[in-house]
Amino acid sequence: MRKPDGKIVLLGDVNVGKTSLLQRYMERRFPDAVSTVGGAFYLKAWRSLHLSLWDTAGREQFHGLGSMYCRGAAAVILTYDVNHRQSLVELEDRFLGLTDTASKDCLFAIVGNKVDLVEERVVASREKDQPLPRAASTRPGASPRQPKQARLEDAVALYKKILKYKMLDEKDAPAAEQMCFETSAKTGYNVDFLFESVFDMVVPRILQQRAAGPPQTVDLTSSKPDALPRSGCCA
Ligand SMILES: Nc1nc2c(ncn2[C@@H]2O[C@H](COP(=O)(O)OP(=O)(O)O)[C@@H](O)[C@H]2O)c(=O)[nH]1
Ligand SMILES: [Mg+2]
Image (cartoon, rainbow, N blue to C red):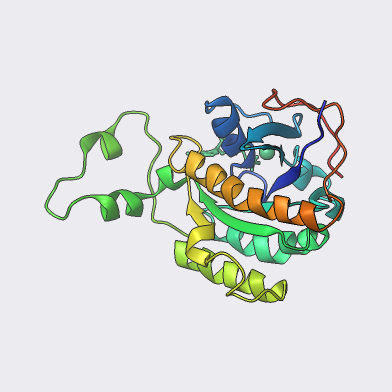
């Protein structure tokens, strides 16, 4: 059995959709009822490496998250809900400090989830003279849409603040536009693109780091690639 080569963690307020994003990507589904408490991480084979993807297992709600959660992380996916501005604010106020234990050259992605609930995105993306597709707004049982509360520009501004906080030069880090995403775990919109962009950026960094010194990953010696979620302690 081989231990993971890199650790990627999802951070963010309870209910923003972290567990749903992971399940959408790894299990290709969006369950109606997500059990936030339980599974802690997935394993994903990518290129030549094995990556561990860590969920918070509900700790953000019940006990808060220890800084050990991010220990040695090669990438942190900071997640907010585009319909709740406060969830973006919390990323800076409550979660950024937890990333101090991440790897020295940790990569940061910022993800605004639940864009399927936003009216603005539907309007903005349609052709000027085309009518709004009926199914998008009038389908019985569809969730009511609302104006977006947290914009992509706000996420870009936070990304730039993070680089300052980490004392990273903007020239040496990936561009904000590359690292800020909007997704829907419900429809699957941009979910593969998010994870796979992060994987593709993280792999060369892990290889570089490995060449430079001993790995900083957690020891999970009994792990299998691409397995179903397992229970694990993340703090
Ligand atoms: N409409 C919509 N609902 C979502 C989306 N992602 C998650 N949810 C719902 O939001 C709630 C919280 O999701 P969950 O994944 O448990 O959030 P977590 O606490 O951050 O892990 C659940 O009821 C999900 O079904 C999304 O992209 N769109
Ligand atoms: Mg969860």
